[in-house]
Each structure stands twice: as structure tokens, then as C-alpha cells.
Image 1 (tube, one colour):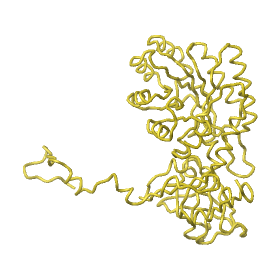
Image 2 (image 1 turned 120 degrees about the vertical axis):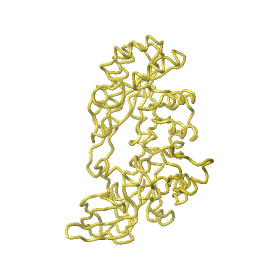
Image 3 (image 1 turned 90 degrees about the horizontal axis):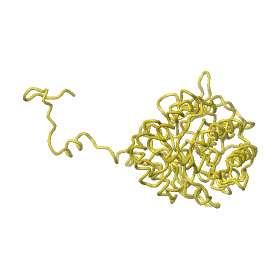
Image 4 (image 1 turned 135 degrees about the vertical axis):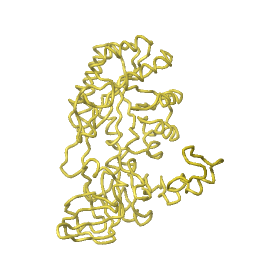
Amino acid sequence: METTSLWQPRHVQSIELVALAERFGTPLYVYDAERIIEQYRRFVGAFDSTLSVAVKFACKALPSLAVIELLHQCGAGVDAVSIEEVELACRAGVPPSEICFTPNCVSFDEIRAGVERGVVVNIDDLSMLERFGHYYGGRVGCGIRINPHIVAGGNPHIQVGHIDSKFGISILQVRHLLRIVESYGIRVIGLHMHTGSDIYDAEVFVRAAEVLFDLAEHFPALEYIDLGSGFKVPYKPDDTATDIAEFGQVMSRAFGQFCHRTGRSLKLWFEPGKFLVSEAGYLLVQVNVVKQTVSSLFAGVNSGMNHLLRPMLYDAYHHVVNVSNPAGKPRIYSVVGYICETDTFAWDRPIAEIREGDILCIMNAGAYGYAMSSNYNARVRPAEVLVWQGQPLLIRRRETVEDLVRTQRTLSEALAATPTPLEDASLPAGGKPMV
């Protein structure tokens, strides 16, 4: 990426961000394909080349057909957590055999749909595992998601491997797990875990991996061990981040020793999402108003938590840059959105002087930005642009009001579409319902 500095972006590749805003309108999500490819290669290159390491892109971070296809061209499969994500991955050209499906609290019908699609299913619940065994026996292999009871990650909302988490089969329930596997002859082909997000200590992964290594002896048909993801990326200058090169060395050594000790050549899977796409994404917004109050100076923009929820949901920091006036004298602003409640992107932040009409760039918007967007306040969602080899490609058009109403009916339309009037037996003859 061509920038004035890492935290003062002016361009994506050779294209000015302001020019992209002018061409495609705002708000606008922009993704740098070169940065995504670079992150993928960094990750894969961190591991010992003698090991069989596979990357499954956690597409919940950025469920874009174009981005899924881009990463698949690099060599990545897909980590899906819903049958809809499975369908997206298939439509992006990813073979079902390269998709791992790890749902939580879903119906057995969704599990069956994944099996019928031919994807690898990871089961994270004992009752669901029992149903799987009753229905499939040993005819279909599956993975098992283990909860290692390790607290790791940043915000409590993204810590998913502790004892109170809804995810995975507790390590304390292994005896029950083994009884179910034996009773139904279930062919367990994988062990999976995911402890949380924003983890930068390699030893956390090693401790969790050792839990799976110890369990592996119980499953002779095992083909892979899936360590999930959760790697920390930098969100601001001088921020901490996972040292992927060090992580790769530490994990390669631990996994290599395990394979040598057991005489097994298993595959090692990871499911990075944020690591691959977060830093490649930018949300461009336009300033509607600059509002001075008795206590704060607000820059109100034409977007809100309906387009980027992380600051309000996780109190997440996203660096904000004025790309229209980068040399302006810094002032302290709170950047706020146009939603009808407290809706803030940045609190009391030094930013180059902001004027009405300026374009602001909100960084680290590649992961869980568009993915978590909504139509709250009946606002439409932005367009998405992928910059590929110096060319901006529109990969998702901006929504319209027509999109919002396409699946709805007015009361009159609903009544007209109902073949026979619905009668309320509780009403007296000739009575009318209350409205």
C-alpha cells in the first residue's frame, strides 16, 4: 500500500482515497487486495515448510464473494459458522472439501445441510454429537470443537474458550464425549478449538494446542488439528500485535514435536479472519456538520454504528484520518454518526482540522465492518470497492430504499395476498378486532 505513513493513509495502491470517495460516493468501504495477499503470505510463510498447514479464511470477518475468491486463489479455504456462509463460499468457487463448518446452537437440520453440501463439520455440543452419531454412525467423519477452559482475548465478548463460554465441549466432559463416540462408532477426523480474539501471546495457543494433542490419542482416524485464530492486529500507532513470525516458529516446533512423538502426520489448520483483512479495509465517510458544544467539538458524518458497530459494541479503537486536509492543524474532535442515539466512532481524538464536506478515513475497517452492518434507522448500507492491481472494482453496490422494502408488504398488500380472511373465534358475531 502506498501511503504518506502507515497511520496517515492518502492512497490505496496508486489511487487517492479522496478520488475513490468522489467516484463511488460515501460512505464507502475500500479494501486493498495487495494488503490481503501480503497478510496471507506472511501467515503461511511463518510456519515450517515441512508441515502441512492450511488456512481457512474466517469469512464472518468479511463475507464478500470477491474477497473469499481472492483468498481462495491464494490457497485459502473457508471457515464458516452458518450454512449461509457455506453457500457464500461455494458460490465464490471454494470446493466444499476446503470448507470447515463450525456452527453453534443451530438445529440439526443445519448440520445435515452442511454434511449434504460435502463440507467438514465440527460439532461443539454433546447432544448434537449424539444426534450426529445416531444419524450417520461412522459413515461421515466429523470434527469436534473442544473448550480448553483457557481465558484469552481482549474484550470479554470475544473470549470464547473459558469455562462459562457457550462454545465447544468442555475438556471436563471428555469421558462423556468418548462414550458417545464409542457407542455410535463416530469417526472423528478433527479436533478444533478457538479461545478468543486479540491474542498476541504464542504460549496461549501452545497451551490450548497441548490440550488437543493430549486428546488426539483417543481418535485413530484423526486427520487435522484446528487451532482457530484470534491474532491481534494493530489498531493505533505503537499498538501491540501478534508477532506472526515468532508464533509460526513456536507453533511449528510444538506441532512438529507432537507429530514426531506420536508418529502421525496430521494437518494443522488455522482460521484467521481479522488478521487477513482488518488492516486492508477503510471506511470513507463525509463530514455533514462540525458542531461546537459547551463541552465538545463534534464532527458529524454520514455514517454511524449501522455501518461500523465495533466502537459502540466493543469500545474498539479505530484510527481516524482527515484525508481531505491531512496537513491541517490538529484539534480535538469526537467523530459521531447520524444514528438516533449515542453513536460515536472516536472520542476526544486529535485529528487534522475538520471542515464540513471533508472526507474522513476510518482505518481497520476490513474486519467486522460491513459484516456487522445493519439497516437501523432504515439507513442503507454502503458500497464496497476492492482495489486490485491498481484498479478499483465495485464488488457490492450501495443499497437503495427499494432494497429495504423488497421483502416487505404493506398491511393492504398483506391482506390482499391472503387467500381467505382470518377469523378470530373469540370475537362476537360482527365484532371487530382492536387496532
